[in-house]
Image 1: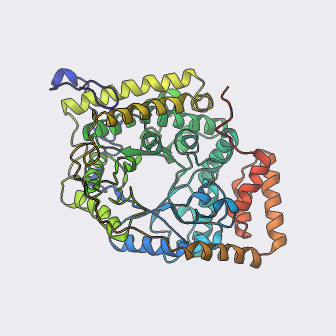
Image 2: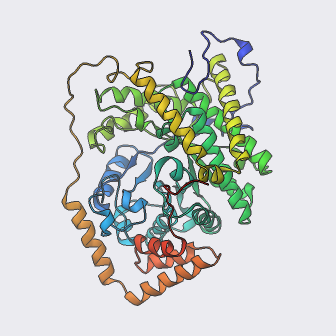
Image 3: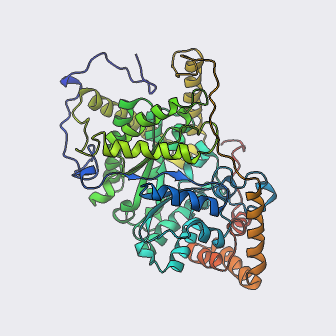
Length: 520
């Protein structure tokens, strides 16, 4: 039989299948983990992704999760925010606060983080095209709390390349988008040195239907493109490499997922040393966040998702994740309720406290099967990375449609297998019971959108209009040159310009990306 990556699975494995000697954890190429003692030193961070409606509602959910033992924040933004539109833009109508929290201005960010000590928690923000703006808002709120920038810890996703191939939440064409990415690298190197400046995301590539091999290869190929852009901007790979992080999917095939995480570390150490000449061990060591597979969750028999999520989270822990998000069982139906979010949180706490996952590093290291899978995933992913390189790198491969076509073909093949019953989905194409489960769903208050629009209108009415115009003009002038954009954007946000106004200024200068244009 074959797994979904096309790897032939033998009925039994022996020492002949895993002849490679294993290095200790914490030593290159970091197959067994980036730190010598792994979870003995510090367990993975429980970082539950949350955000909905307005800043007030999301702030209440964050306080709820922190009070129940969550160690870090993970902010979900709504679709208009991710696309750089304010909530009162006509294109945002009906989408405000639906898939995450609406953030239009500094006023919203102040409410979102009210009462949360930013010098003590680490925060992950899933935002890409306007990532620099949301990080600057976070910095401005911290400034208001009296927290110095070099005390801030967290990650901003800032990975726009995967938006072009897997998720679709892009604004600008690739080249100016890469400029914003590297401007953020340089800004944080100078002002916010403890911040992880990018989370290079395979998660959404897998959600779009890729195989594990494709997730590995295309994610690392994007990482290579970001590193090249940073080097071209004059940054040192030994410096910026320390602040890179990755974001992977934890899917259902437990052993393949463990092997995938181990192969990812081995591959990235090779990339940084061979392609970029990095010698700093911190720059060679891949660190990653894992989220359980949203696309694996089913609306049928939704309680089954609790089991799926637990298995997926265990694979991330056994594979050495630095932080984990566990999906809620009701997410195939709606945003999570507090009840479902608590079960997801407790899943991680049980894994940490009761399952023995933190006792030893790389607990499956040395397994004939896992070692063989690690080798095969590494080899197949490297072959695909080299194919992307032959096409001119990740940006060229995206512009040519190669990456998109590969993912679409894998997604189609998987769906055919499910429909033919060759891939079993419990409760969907096997073991159906015909009964509909009664599940309480999270409901978004319809009045939340109106409250958000009123606040944004109030921000515009109460700010100094002349200061806002001057600040936007400074953004426009800087966009026409090659200076770092973040300082002028920070001052525009301080002047209460909105995210949408700044993004519109950049749209006027750079244009927007059209995925429907004919490929070269």
